[in-house]
Length: 96
Image (tube, rainbow, N blue to C red):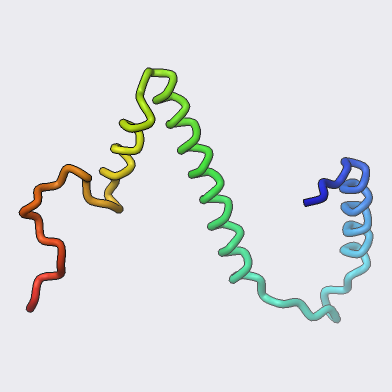
């Protein structure tokens, strides 16, 4: 993926500002972007969560936690039953 220079980004921002200044709200048709905004919010949340996970794992490693212990804690998350769950625990949906 090509990275843009600060100068290229600045020129693009100036072009956008110039175009935005020339728009006439009375005659410009615009799409509602709520659906796209929802995606942006979700992506930002994922990036924040990824950062929080990296920070937590790094802190655990600094505190001497092994990768196995960190992985075991992942398997104990609310989204997944703990790896050491009782063998007697049901593995299928109960019938009504």
